[in-house]
Length: 245
Image 1 (cartoon, rainbow, N blue to C red):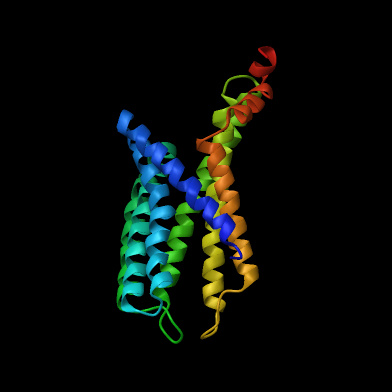
Image 2 (cartoon, rainbow, N blue to C red; image 1 turned 45 degrees about the vertical axis):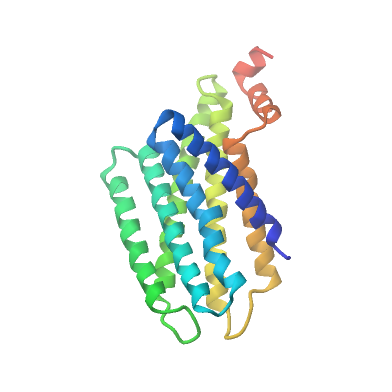
């Protein structure tokens, strides 16, 4: 049970936020809402549930590995959607940003082929593991950097009453959530590489991954489902809020 709390919180919050975004897309039919909702759903709740379902229920079987590979496929689609969201929201006119989702999708497809043909295990080539993890970390880090960059700009505008404090804080929270997720994937990567044959992930690693999940869950919740008390607190800290209590 060690470390399950933070990961469970991330799954629940990720599911709630993704469903809310997809519900919003149903009304607006706008690409950012669709890609953000699909990205969160694929990367978190849906992708991980499929990925871990088979190995948990039928460890060591072909069904387990098939479920693992299908889960990686679903998760890859989530990352592809997340990269499209970052491109369209933060860098819609940049040619390199437009090319990023294409390169990401191609790289994840190659890694998925490696997983489907060569199992990760002692003495097995790990090129597909390296490719898969680093592409996913790059996707998360890019989104985090863009969001934190927007937060740095908007917080200055909030100070002079030209930007909304809640929106500015949402950029900060989204950036932190993506950063924590990137650290989580790096933690999994380091743990897998350090494992010896027959060895299981240690309690310390599980706690670290749970901490990343909890941070991501809390900041994700504040970014997309901010409580009214939190929004009021942010508003009172802005010049407009001080002028109009």
